[in-house]
Image (cartoon, rainbow, N blue to C red; front, side, top):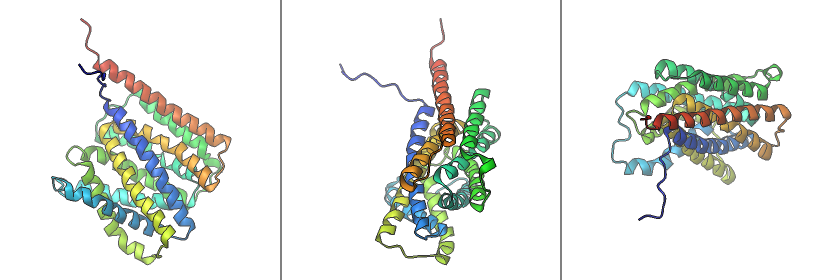
Length: 302
């Protein structure tokens, strides 16, 4: 008889939450390197191209070992729309992270959660209860507390991040649909390949040859970006899109901490208060979802 106790299988939303946590770490590492490269004078178009080109290099061994044709897609126009939206959103977010404090840029990016909930209901027909809708609103209030829009100067970087948030929200919902008949590798490979090809002409206009230290930063951007995007895609596939939007709020304290440590961006009381609200709403909805799933899985009473 085995001495190892059987482990209960994690629910879809719990698996998704863990993937989203790993994704948050990867994205935080990536945006720190983006800001460092911007301080060294590199253009965002070059960063996006190199990030996606390096992503393809890292993905090539997986593509070659794949049993199925990674590039096959039964819905090419849906895939194209998703890649276009994500690619433009990626460029806009790189610009915002390069020109705004990390916590501010990350806070603005979370406005996509409201779009995700609405699109998940309209396009995926997900049933989103009042408590979950309320948690999204509360999380957004926490973002507003951190950003304090009345004191925030409206700039191109702010507009870029808000536009990126809307495009990423569409991508999140589309990923949920595409994962029904596409692998994670297919989704990530298509995104990196199309963005690199389309972004090459733009990158050449502002190209600057990196030295050894800069090349190392570019390498980290590429590796962390692919890892984060893969984890993000698997998280969306494992859990409900609206639920995963809540878990993605964990990027906020990660970005705030990284900004403080690396760039000496001060964490004031408003930032800390907003982070508490955001994390609190995320923890609440996660615990409640677990309780509901256990209740649904329990056998009916005799």
